[in-house]
Amino acid sequence: MSVVYKGDQRRGRRWKDLFAELDPDVQFHLWPEVGNPEEVKYLVAWEASNDFLKTFPNLQVLFSVGAGTDQFDLAQIPDSVLLVRMLDPGIAQGMVEYVTCATLNLHRHMLDYVAFQREAHWQPIQLQPASDRRVGIMGLGNLGQAVIKQLKTLGFPLYGWSRSPHSIDEVTCFAGWDQLQDFLHHCDILICLLPLTDETRGILDQNVFDAMPPGAGLINVGRGGHLCEQDLLSSLNSGHLTGAVLDVMNEEPPRKDHPFWSHSRILLTPHVAAMTQPETAGRVLLENIQRHQRGETMSGVVERDRGY
Ligand code: NDP
Ligand code: OXD
Image (cartoon, rainbow, N blue to C red; front, side):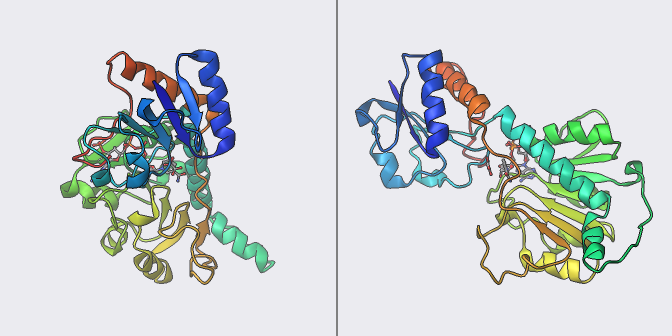
């Protein structure tokens, strides 16, 4: 039984060493070295074309290197192959740091102060307590809930929205399309931590922005495909929204003349909110392979019909 890893070589070497140390029975191959393709049961990759998948006729599990799996075309993955997303505590920690930082940036008017500094303009803005700034999180999964845990400690009133109903201490939860508008009315800061699926593509549109309170801000750490870029520009330019922190783009990197680069109300980062951490993720990966070997359920298996 063997595993093939195709991705960042530094991480791959760390995982190879980790597997050798913790479970020498598992043969860990660093692509392009694959051993006997017929013996490969597990593939770990960020992307995998149909042709590439076909080189492993006995493949049983395809592991995403990251938390998201939208980069894979489920229709191209044989039904017999399970697709698994990465539930790495290191990814969660990175996301918590980034979203906390972005929330505080919007809450404490940092976009304004950066602009004021450029103009040598000394202008305090009235401080609003965190208890008066409502924060809404779209997506109450692994990462949404990790973020909520941290934001709670800062005193923001919290709201959440997901596909199925959730009950989370000190969070007012909404679920489904029927409750989306009610949720949005409470979002002075809206954080998108949804997976990109057929249902969620383009969700951050004019209707959503219009339903948010005047002066609200947006943080998108999900995927660029969630955002209707023109609608965001209209909402920022009209002043209805006052700021956006964006870590993901439809086209990465965006073209040089993309309006987001120079927009004074947008803080843009190059898809760095969270990164798979070799140490913690390697252990999660090995544990999942061992569970599969024992016939147990793995963590993070994607449900094909819902797409995440
Ligand atoms: P999970 O699968 O654990 O959680 C997804 C959440 O989204 C669930 O609460 C789910 O609802 C909700 N959801 C899914 N579809 C809908 C829908 N149609 N309507 C309402 N809610 C919906 O994902 P993670 O928390 O692990 O990750 C979320 C995303 O974060 C990833 O898919 C990826 O795109 C992004 N990401 C970005 C990174 C970055 O660096 N920018 C890094 C890592 C991840 P329910 O609970 O009811 O199932
Ligand atoms: C992920 C990402 O999905 O980095 O892990 O975006």
